[in-house]
Length: 101
Image 1 (cartoon, rainbow, N blue to C red):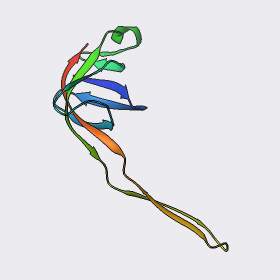
Image 2 (image 1 turned 90 degrees about the horizontal axis):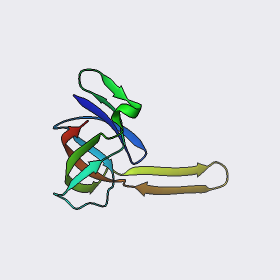
Image 3 (image 1 turned 90 degrees about the vertical axis):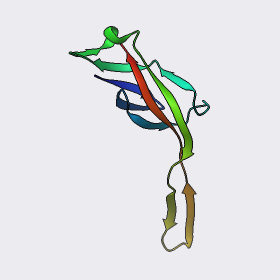
């Protein structure tokens, strides 16, 4: 059984017991989180649309963190312009506990 959830502008395919990294959520470590934007659920057949209107996915927040550094380098030739910048994206690591749907 799996479900497709939407959070942080992205969609994730999850099953019970999976560990996923989503965009940062304002939730403390160890607490539970509920994803109510369920796009599809597959049990014995794929359910989408009105069939999954009340479906939810619950999980436990394992940790909050930052990803690897990505270097952004801007450069324009012949003008002496260059700019180096780094970015570390914040994430929340969630363990999927139950798919209700």
